[in-house]
Image (cartoon, rainbow, N blue to C red; front, top):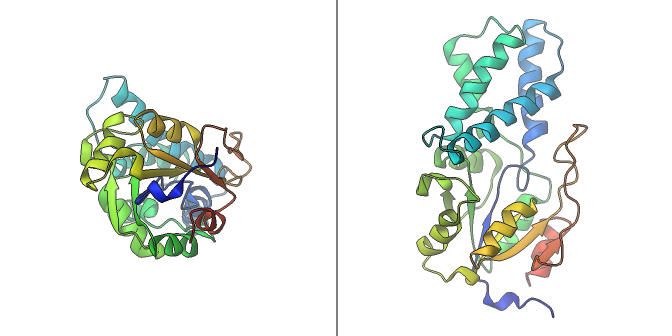
Length: 240
């Protein structure tokens, strides 16, 4: 039985890896720093480990070991460690702050702006990311992402996949859960959203992890309502 897209009134999106190419963007930024200081290193590993600090920080919160904190704070904690490990000794405090805000300057995937703009013509569209609000707003300005609204796990002082993040987004939008579609390139995010009644949309991002050891998901399982190869394909499947 095909999914009835007419029930959907709003789309909320995972951002890192789904809408923007975080890995290539971060490698670009840290490689420029390395070139400036004449340091040759595995900047892909740097990017992956930096991202890992964000993942580890969220898990520590879920495990009850730490208080909730912004993504910017988690990124900075890991960045300070990596700068030391990679022997980057010449950055000023302001320069380190600027580098940490590389996560505010992530490039959209080539189809994201066009696809989101098409979806915006019919649906309310917004973020639903574990990234903090300031980060997401700056990223939208940088990349031309046409959100109607910026929602974050920060609104709920938790992180996905906590059910209150998904349900809280629907409540803030004044909609029933099934009227909101969660869209992501990661099925664990979609399964968590579906478990509390949201509709789900998958977009494949096979290049998210580049040549890293981790492999991206390229297909959704049958439980996902709509699956697409990119956001232009996704917009077509959503009737726009």
